[in-house]
Image (cartoon, rainbow, N blue to C red; front, side):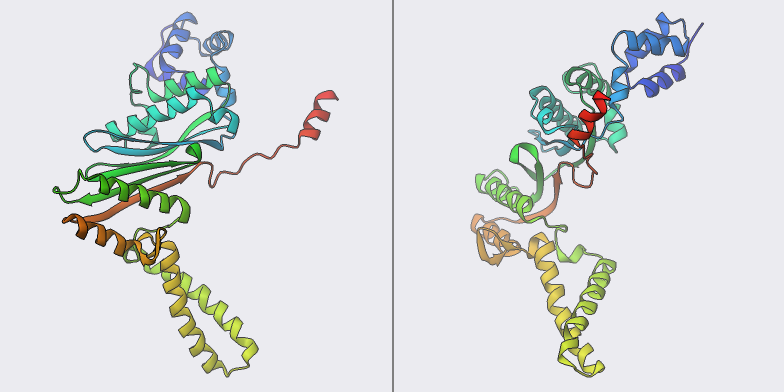
Length: 312
């Protein structure tokens, strides 16, 4: 029985096994999908599909910066913190970061179809290979890529947090080591202080309106104990809100945050001072901060219940 490229694709989706192995299985099974699945299971390849349903909430962040300026930071997940320390897994994550930087994929799906660096396998096929070797589900979750300018990576806590800072730097100082040091300091600040925005100018009106609404309601509630007339209470609350919105910018926007190494100045002022000292221009263009597993609901196992279930 002949088979088509669509059959290969369907078998791959059913089993999670690499394209070439699926093609071989269909050849051995004379095009019969069910027999091909059995063939893959007998060869120990289709076990990866079973693992694919398990929650991967641990993992590592890794970054890559090429000599020509392409840069990427990625988050790759795995099931347990123990497996996240596996050198094979970490090398896989490093290769994924390189693939993103050098190939500029549109999204994770496009990335998975690209060739993994230094091999003839796709990223998906390499991922399936690592699942089979390590024995845990692995997922490439997300990435950010920058091209041009000066990109500086920072990996914190062995990969729990990954940061990539991108700066527009004038040609006369872009190779100055102080610029790299500045990028590293900013990345460390981002890792620690968790800014959500680069600058207050890019925070949407919708976000500020919502924050203003929350802070106004909070301020009015706080003023109730003062027994002020309603109009007076609202005037006082509105003045309080102005200060709290400024506080929001100082906490959530990188350029308005106090610089951690010199809290008397903002990050914005510190960057300007470094640029002036070096005789050039520096503009922080963008940043990305990933923390492994953030937003993923982790499975909470009860070990005693699990053991009891095994002995029933």
